[in-house]
Image 1 (cartoon, rainbow, N blue to C red):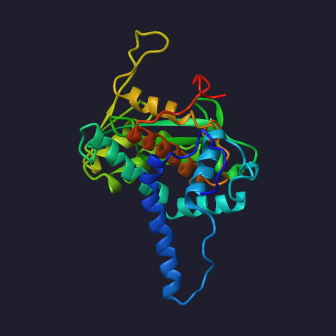
Image 2 (cartoon, one colour; image 1 turned 90 degrees about the vertical axis):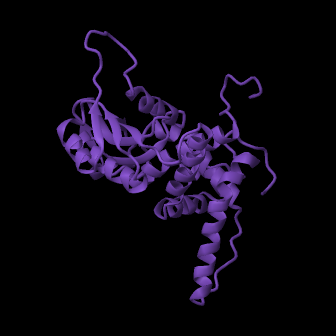
Image 3 (cartoon, rainbow, N blue to C red; image 1 turned 60 degrees about the vertical axis):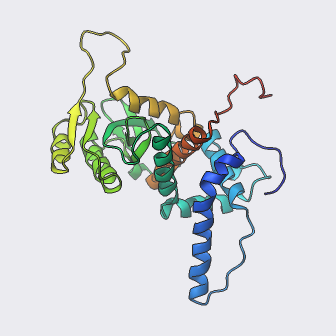
Length: 285
């Protein structure tokens, strides 16, 4: 790796050790595939760790790709890797593997049996195509809607990004399909009243008990809602990554990748016992 002053978002050696095997195997598989059909490609010149660090930098700071600092690889190269890893499921695979490690660390089985679902509507930037946006009539937000399903520790099991006008029921059904395809042991999920009948019925068809958890009507203002607070906390974790405060991605799939990447960062820090540096840290100058 090129010697340079480290950024707070950079991977430590311990976190890189968790991620490196998947990325190096991916690069080797691509090299072997080209060799098998007689294509002689260039030897990759950019360090995979630096590529991943650059993607984390964008995710954490919220800058545009072309504003990447010059001590990272070229922004077009970094985005190219990000797009490939998103398309080929590398981020999804990393999230799955790290989730299993965190669950094991907490004394849980690798495969969760219970989950919580929620949605979040966010505004979009000007570069997002109008056809990929919509209006959330309930929250009065024009933009996109994110649906996530987590385990009872708040770890991401599946994510979907749509126009904000898409109903929670449609998103909930898709989330259940995604989550059960990867985590076949799921039998329970808690949701808010926005998911209503259709998601409950779809869950039943998948042998999943979908329970609606309502707020206590007599409690005014903010209150912690049973079970649902877990997924709401996860949304809070994601909001530490400035790229997610607003949706900047042209493609919804890239938005999903950015959300998954933020969780990968969270998971890797959990496993290694590291914390995210903030302005409160006296070592940050």
